[in-house]
Image (cartoon, rainbow, N blue to C red; front, side):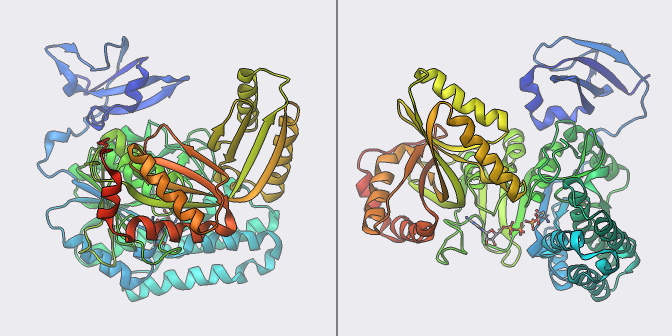
Length: 558
Ligand SMILES: Nc1ncnc2c1ncn2[C@@H]1O[C@H](COP(=O)(O)OP(=O)(O)O)[C@@H](O)[C@H]1O
Ligand SMILES: N[C@@H](CC(=O)OP(=O)(O)O)C(=O)O
C-alpha cells in the first residue's frame, strides 16, 4: 500500500499560513501555477477507515495516488527535536567562542536542539568587501586581496585551535579564491554571484562547529540550508522564503533525526532560488529568519536567538549605552521594531514564529544567565507605555501636494501606483486632503546601486510632478516609538515636551493601525540626540510619575 498519497487541488489561502501541526502532516507541498494552488503529499496516517481525510477547510482536493517510501512519523520517537538555537556571528567569532557555545548547548541536557549558525564574526562583511575589490583589482592580484587572506587565516586558525581537520574547509577556501579570480576576470559582481560569494561564510562556520561537536563526543550533522529544502524567491541578496520550505525542511531534519539522531547544525541566511536553483540569501541578519522558519516547520517548543546583548533593548546600545533589556514583547511589537530598523532582529523573522505560534527568546551568549527577552503572541499591556525606541537613519521623505487636476481619490491612487510601478515600498505615510508626506523604504533603495538609486528617485519625482508639486527631502530619520498606542495621548504629550525642550521640530508624524507604533520624522543630524532625550524621559524618569499621568486611560491590548 502507498505510504504517502498525493493530492492536487486548490487549498484555501488561509491554509498557506496554517499551523505548524498541519504542515507536519505533509510530506511535501509545492505551488502549482498560482499562489493559492498547492500540490501536497500527505502521510498515510491521515487515512481513517479506508477514506482520505485532509483538514483543509472543506477544500476539494483531487487525489493522485502514488507509491512512496515510508517516511517516519512524528510519533515514532519519544525524543523529538525540542527547540532551535541560533547563534549569530558575534557568538561564533573565534575558536574560544565556539567552545563556549558548545558548552552552552550541552548545559541544556533536556533540550534536543537544531542549531543555526551565522558566519564567524564579520566574515560576511569581509566577503562582500573582497568581492568589491576583486571587480577592479585584476586577476593576478585576486589571491592577494587582504580580506581573502584574513578569512583564510581566521578559518584555518580556528580549525587548528579546535584541533579538527582543516580539510573540511580547505576546498571551500580554494573555491572562494577561484571565485574571486572569476569576479576579477569578469570585472563584475552580480547579485547572484554576491550571494554565492557570501554563502562561504555560513558553509564554513557550520562545518567547523559540527566537526568540533563530534570531536568532543556530541554527535552532530552539518546541513547546507539550500540542500535541505529552503526554497526562496529568486530575489538575490533579499530573497523570501516560500511555503514549500516548511514541509521539505521538516521532512529532512525530522527524518534524519529519527533514523540516526545527531544535532543538526544548519547554515543560517541561505536558501535556494526556486527558478534559478542558485544559492540565495535572506537579507542581512537573515539567520534569525532561518531559525524561526525551522521552528515553525518542525513545530518546536521554542526558538532561541543568541546574540551579544541581554535581549531586545529599550534602544540601540550603540546610540545610548543606558539602554535596558525589554523582558517581554509581542510578535507584533518585535516585528515592528525589526522592520523599523532595530538591527537585533531580521525584519521578516517574526512571521514564521507568529504563524506557528512559537515563542522566541532573545538571549545573550556572553551572559547566558541574563533572562533575555521573551516574544509571544500576547502579553499583559495594562502597565505598558513605551517598550522601545528605534531609529532608522538616512531616509528619503517626499512631500507631495496635489495640483488639484485630479480629485482626491484619483490623487492618492496615482501617487501609490507610481511607487508600485517602480517597485519602491513606502514606509510611513501622513495625508491631508490634498497632500501626502511619505518616506521611502531605504532597504529597498539600498539594495540597488547608488547611481541607480539617484536616477530612480529622479524618475519618481518626474512621474509625480505630472499631478503634484513634489519636494524631495533627504537625510531624514524615522524615530519609531514601539509601545502601547492605546496610551498615545500620554506618549505624544511627553514626546513633544521632550522635543520642544531640545529644540527639535518634528516634520511628520504617523500612528499606524498596528496599534504598537508611532513614527516621527526628524532631521538625521538631530535624531540621535532625540533618541537619547526620549529614552531619558520614558525609561529613566520616575515611572510612577508616568502612571499617574496616565490617569484613567488604562488600555489593554493583549
Ligand atoms: N533595540 C536593540 N536591542 C538590542 N540590540 C540592538 C538594538 N538595536 C540595535 N542593536 C544591535 O544589534 C546587535 C545584535 O544584532 P546582530 O549583530 O544581528 O546579532 P548577531 O550577529 O549576534 O545575530 C547588538 O550588538 C546591538 O548593537
Ligand atoms: N552572516 C549574515 C547572516 C546573519 O544573520 O548574520 P548575524 O546573525 O551575525 O547578524 C550577515 O552577516 O548578514
